Length: 252
Length: 281
Image (cartoon, rainbow over all chains, first blue to last red; front, side, top):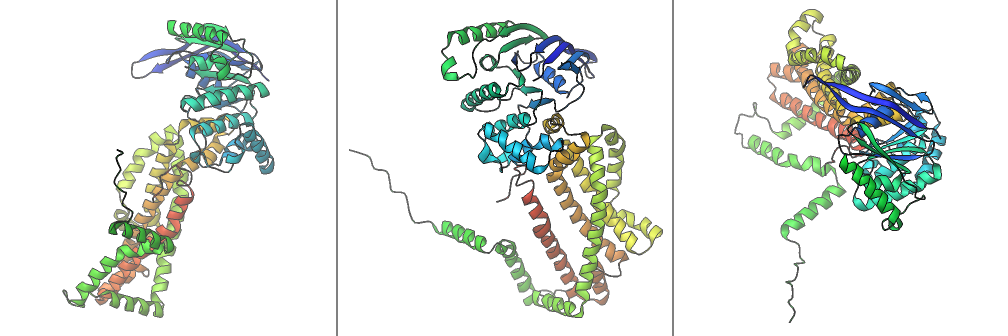
């Protein structure tokens, strides 16, 4: 388990059409403790996806520092696993080979990476789908594979970019419950980006509210894990916290 | 009083029975799908020839062509010419593909390479294969080099252009996913960009081989000493319309075979299997 630290993170880019510098992320400092699950919520355009892309190394940052366990990061790397809203599974690889992709890049031999992949697939109840192609799976199953693929590479930090935004409402609730269960078992450090306030509160041990490229608020969620919707939906503490976060997001 | 719905008709209509017979027949003998569409065409050809609408020497019927086919096979001319043509196409296509795919990857992945090479590529694409023949004949004479050059040239452009298109249409998230799972940029090319571009590369290949096949026949007509194109042109000199027609039929059948036995199976095993391309029914 490793920590993730953002120190005065900044992103400005040049807009060649307007001829001006645009600030997407003004000044964000944030620390995710080892094994902590932090949600980042904010309205669209608040810079949350830009932050994730910078942490993942997909975009260069223009100011500040990104540290994984105290070491600055540069470019994409297997220490930071990413789960995408678009799932981003390789259509030409079976589920097993998708999940075994990270180990394959590390040079793990075939038999061993298949064993690892099957173990992780079993964790998400996907053992039966190992030999299928992604296009043959439902959206919910595809994203389960997406999560498991990132986990199977044993990243120090798991970055999730609105991963459940494109699955149907019922499936989303199930995936959220599964995620809290898996996180509780494995205690990976997670940074979870979403615009869905109940989702942010349900999953996280801490919710960070972002607005206009700045941290607006930082709300701890002291509810026990794993969490279940049928228990929390009528829970007063959950409702109070959700209302509080929602008020902050709407004031943003 | 309860309302009763009218009974659903149970007996299929005549047209539905025809549909069912077609599905059953083509499932049992898939070759029917390839053969049946040609039956009306052959019938029309046969009828036109049999009625002697045109003089027989100018418009021979299917039977004459088949007879010539058997005759030329016996003499060994047709197998030899066929092997020559197909061999030239295969060699030219192999070289063309070997050049085109790396070039397409370079242009598809590097903005600088794209800026530098794309306009040049479009320029040379416009100077079509046959337009090169005059200068090639001056440079290399009537020989294999000239023909190979033409085929390589013809195959190159469709494959390069489609490879570039394919690589550029691979979703950014797929390359990002691979990078964050530990893939080096070089492995991203092999593991993500090439398979992601494969449906487009196949389209390029289909076009390239089609153009190449036509360019080869043209080149054989002009510079050839053997091959199907030469056979046809030589037959013209001898006034043998039967052999010209035979050559035309052979061209079509051969292309159909390449499509059905080489290209289509690859497409079924890749893009269609992966759900990247909708399959034909």
